[in-house]
Image (cartoon, rainbow, N blue to C red):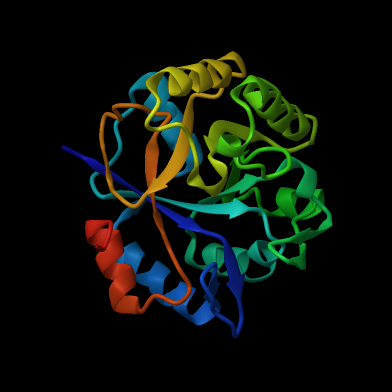
Length: 236
């Protein structure tokens, strides 16, 4: 059975690491190792698998970034481009082109021109409109949250793949009725799949495309730990 590995990054910096930030030297080492061991796929390949049952190659890997920080353009994009590796970014609609006080500090996010320039190797997906935790708002507001998140990005002059990434990896995984309600909302907006965290590989064909697991790549992980997580998933 073919396994799909999906990695989740956030920020890239030149000489700094933290929980969410991988430095450029580590990123280069990680990507070069991945290139010798995995087959990279694009977000549109994931859509094709869901919609058309198109199979993945063996040892498939999808690299994702969340939130759309400007450092993805400054530091990640040149490295991926040089190595000819595709990746995708899940965008927060109201953050595009702005400096936002987020996670306790002012941070810069990608603008439309940067998004367009990166589109030669980067594809984009949905990550809400204001980065709200969907499990911290009433379920009666889920439809508006999804609808607005989709509407804002579809109004922009960039192509968006119909895949959603849950903010904070949060979704009603223990409530079947609520999860079914959320999936119905997604489908009404032509969203065909959604990514959680989970830190496991995915068996294919995907059992539920609205619960695709990603492996969380942390800037303070060693290279050995990175390789272990990619190969085996969650470390207990």
